[in-house]
Image 1: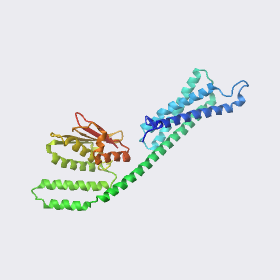
Image 2: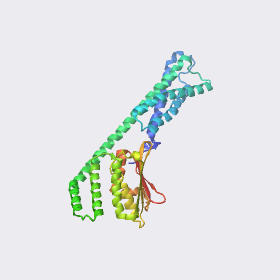
Image 3: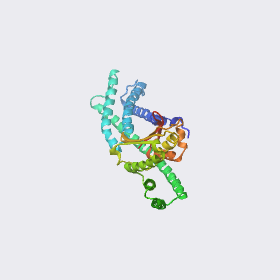
Image 4: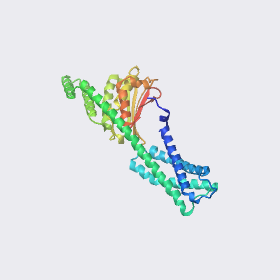
Length: 355
């Protein structure tokens, strides 16, 4: 879908959203100015005009100060600490509201006094505290309501897409359904028929059975413990290691305190399979696969690096197989995360994402 001019974004905010905020500020300044003028009709001198461009400019300047003070507060609450719970971000306003009012009062009065422009003094200054505070509460109330509406719209769209994806998955499963218990029984039968002296073969078949068992469990759960996911990955890599022998070196770097975190199941295997199949398999000397999982800014960061042949057209790699493409879509739809593909040093690729 082609993006229109007003849909283009500047630091994550669309042009029409910026224009809407500016319109609210200009409208508020105009309404406030007209309100003051109407209420001061009885106090004007006979030769004094009803409207004054200078007075209107002063009010626009006042709201410009409010806008400039609003921008960093908006960034703090809706960008920097957006991962906070709503109640914690609302409590943050108890600090930013007094800062907003006092900063605006200081800047506004300093400018007026510098140009010898009359302003409220004494008890009347309470209006220069009350009205900006009221405006602050009103505008950030609108900002929070708009964010809730925007996220709710995205959630409804996501739910509709997931329902469609689930329906397609169910239809595909019905077309290619195999009773997993039948597979386990076959594995057990094969294992029982293998002589005891071929213990390595028996072990490989047992590990393969474990992989199928985990896949069944993963299909019935939205999340699993990271240690269970890693156990599955290690068994999968062990089978690949048997196939490639010394041509495949494996390194897994995970901090111990992350093992009990919940993660989406079967999210790493397609990435590792892609690195082996398209990165290392064609190399006579083989290469290395490195899996790193670490915590960054309250998120888990996953990266799978290989020393394979690499790829120039990184966007085209998602068209080569369903596993990698499905993982990309799954991360985008369910976890709002982007699958990033970058060059590894000295060669190969690194695929990473955060949840």
